[in-house]
View 1: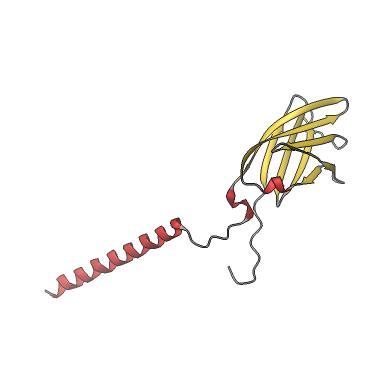
View 2 (view 1 turned 90 degrees about the vertical axis):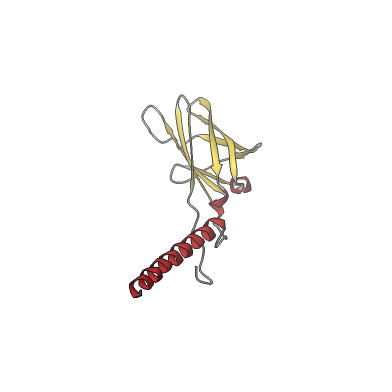
Length: 146
């Protein structure tokens, strides 16, 4: 990567949860979560719900967005590893709890590692193959001369 170039944005992490009446899909990226809630019976969006998200022991209120979705931001969304996540959705007189799992890998923040053991191993293997190939060519040429 060239000096001064920005790192590529991390791919969003997808979280899904279902209950008897609702289906929730959330995307987590850069410490923010965007949620979309729909009814399971007809897949119609639920834009007038009250949504609360419990992650790592803290409850966050999701704010309704203009597009009918919901969102919130938290530093807990940047913590790598798996964690249980609970969504509480209340709409049209139906209150339900949807359980899901968020799986943030360590690489979601963008890698600053330019090498590593795996890359080093590939370089060693590449040089070994090239040296072996050159040794075979030298041996063949030597046998032709004799």
